[in-house]
Length: 419
Image (cartoon, rainbow, N blue to C red):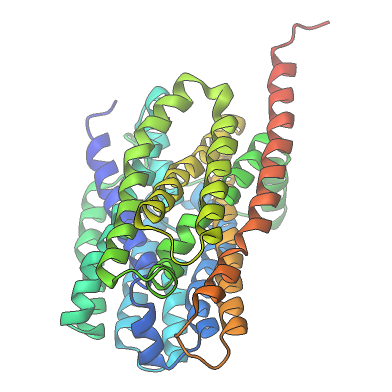
């Protein structure tokens, strides 16, 4: 391993932590946002919907830009965009301006994670890439911890504008470190690929999508993280407080536990996928099935579920977070290095498309089941709303099973002796 790899990775990881923080910063501020901007549940969901829509829509373009301009330039642009957008969100007092600011957060956020993965692939030896990739995913989730209990405290004591301005200011210091420390490769500060043409982009994307491993990665990322994303980004806090009767502090702590579980499971999954790569998709199917079973237990419980059951819920949802990172490993091992950026962008759309659909569906169902009640959502409404996860799980599990069969068949055919 190159001696500068750790420094490059830590600075890039810091940018990703900040991106997760900005992405998750509305999770514990949903009720305050409803009061500040005078929104309904569906309008509140629009913040996250548009942020995720921009994120998902930008993954393929960002992947192509990454292959063309390199990680440093794209990552710097993403950090600057997030900083400006979060500043705008801090100062916004009307709903349209706040929506525009969250769109900017999603645009900057879209440029971060796959750039960090490109740096990992460039700076670390192949045998360490699965571990560092998992560590990137799980340590990055510490940004969600910073957006849970500390944000709750800051919003209560300092108010909306100072809290979000302080969050935006973190990007300035990180930007200086990024420009001083990060290089695209150990040999070159900036690496550029061939110029982008419409025909070349179409051919690249068609080739990437034709690989069963890319599709398996996409559906893995679609199926596993949306439940935890939904809880962490917007609806977890209202669900735990309004439906399950927890105090705001306990709800914040449970959401933090979910993030800690994400961080704890990542290294174990990295070891497992390196040791038994053939069974990576089996882990995806098994963990998702457990998540479905525990959610069914919570929603079927008569009245509020006991705290131990809710703790079990956030634990299993947290486990699914690092499982989604396995999708990137499918993409890395099924595409050549010059197309890994594009493949990663395609795969990274999956979870955010599913999360986007779910967040919007929950907001719409809550408004349907509690019309005219503002933010006073009933437990029954939340039961209906959280049930919107089942169609997504069904679709995702079927597709994971389908494309794992195709990917395995391709590997076995490549290993077969010539006739």
